Amino acid sequence: MRIRHRLGALISAAVVGLVLATAGASAASAHDTLEQSDPAANATVKSLSAVTLTFSGDPLGAEGATVIQVIGPDKRYFETACPDLNGPAVSAPVTLGRAGTYEVLWRVVSSDGHPISGSYTFSYAPAAGGAPAQGSTTPKCGPAAPTSAPDASSTGSPGSAGDPGLWIGLGVGAVVLIGVGIGAWALARGRRS
Ligand SMILES: [Cu+2]
View 1 (spheres, rainbow, N blue to C red):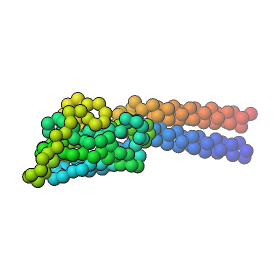
View 2 (view 1 turned 90 degrees about the vertical axis):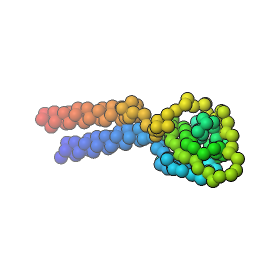
View 3 (view 1 turned 180 degrees about the vertical axis):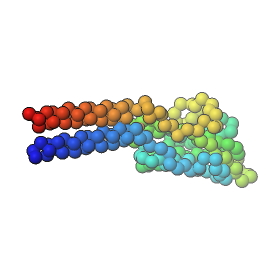
View 4 (view 1 turned 90 degrees about the horizontal axis):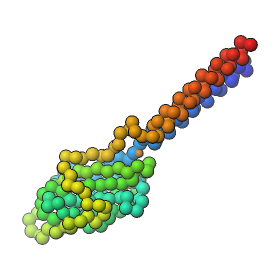
């Protein structure tokens, strides 16, 4: 009876260990993702005072880590300040120039500590009249981006195969399994003698 008790305890400990290892692995590989943007990708706006991005977690606000650049059809920059971080929302004020396609480039540090970045485009079609802003030849925040293709829009999720957290989790799981095997073997041996 005592041996069966111990075997049961060993197995439940192993199950708990496996669950913890798996949970640790998936938490480590879960970056925040861009859930919502204003303006939305491919939307057409008549006026715009800010670009606001909302993520699945709260990005970390390290110095210089949070960047939104808004690049006009003339390749000039139209964001007027560095972005503000407010919980899961990152927002930068803009004053747009002439009508056309604008590209939003963003970079934040995910709440799990990993930098993530992406880009998308929207169209600006203002009502006639009113002088368009001139924009700037240099970004307000972050380094000037290499001229990027508009269709290079990614939400920036580096390959999960390379995530060290996953491999640490799998390693812990393997160690737990080996421990269970040795324990069961020792118990079976003890029972026989
Ligand atoms: Cu991550």
